[in-house]
Image 1 (cartoon, one colour):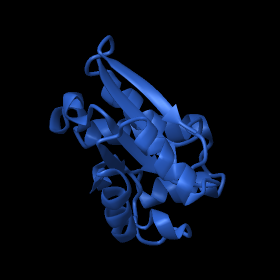
Image 2: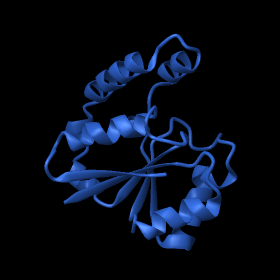
Image 3: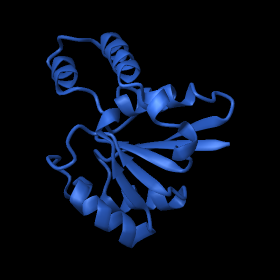
Length: 147
């Protein structure tokens, strides 16, 4: 069984964030944000995460921009130009256009956790992404959202 985790850092202390990752034996944190350097949470900046993850839990860090929405999609959603159903459709099309399932094999992400800023996964592309990856092997992948 392949396990994919997701996590958002908003409204989490650094202690809670890193303890969740350690408790679930996450091997690699996959940052799926467009930009990993401009967020408000100091511990969630890419350069800091690399250090903290390694020192606190021996966890690797990767930033994969292919897994992020476009700036335009994110901006349109935040401005109310696109509702969540529209966002989901555009994001799914983007994953197909980027050939995510051909370029990235879900088996390579076992025990990985996909990071974004949203507090919960319901209206976050990290959920859409892992569901897209799960389609490669629906009976062999389980998704756990760390909240």
